[in-house]
Image (cartoon, rainbow, N blue to C red; front, side):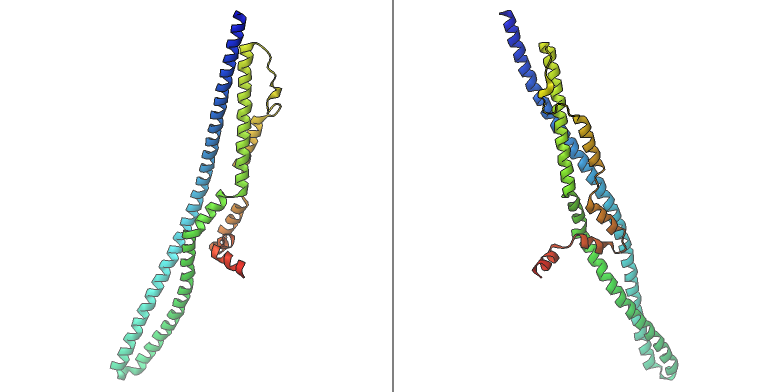
Length: 251
């Protein structure tokens, strides 16, 4: 009777240990998922910061171009004022008609050149404004969405979760087996484990390496686009506006 009670007590203890191991496995799994999510968030945050730095540098260059164009427009307005002044002098000083006419001709030539420069400046200014507006409203968000929603990233994260779950299961099963052996003083057959004969730790390390070295095709396209002089146009080809896609579909 004493031996039977001892065996029953051991069975109860084994069940308790199994439940405890199952809870430990669940906690380990949750920890692995949290760490994976944290690593993913850090990776995306670093990439986002790099893109933000590059975008800020580009916007700074665009701002400088805009300032130069504004200065050119201001000079053109000043030249217009000079033309008006020259015409008034022509009316008041008829005796100096030849000299004034010469000065007027030169000023009008400057005005013509300024008009050409102004037209050129306006033609260059509008695309710049459009490019900056597109970057602020859609470009940066499109780059971020393409990375976060990429199929390659989803698959790699899924493989990472499975590998982490298998590794946690294998370690939990091994620990449970160890407790059973110590409690019952018997050899435990571990071949019944779902991960028997599998090096789950090596598999998890391999998937982590794959995740850390993941190369997204869309990022290759973005990198090439950012190296182009007209990088905004390249990005627009990669991330066309929805309205444009709808128009093409209707056509």
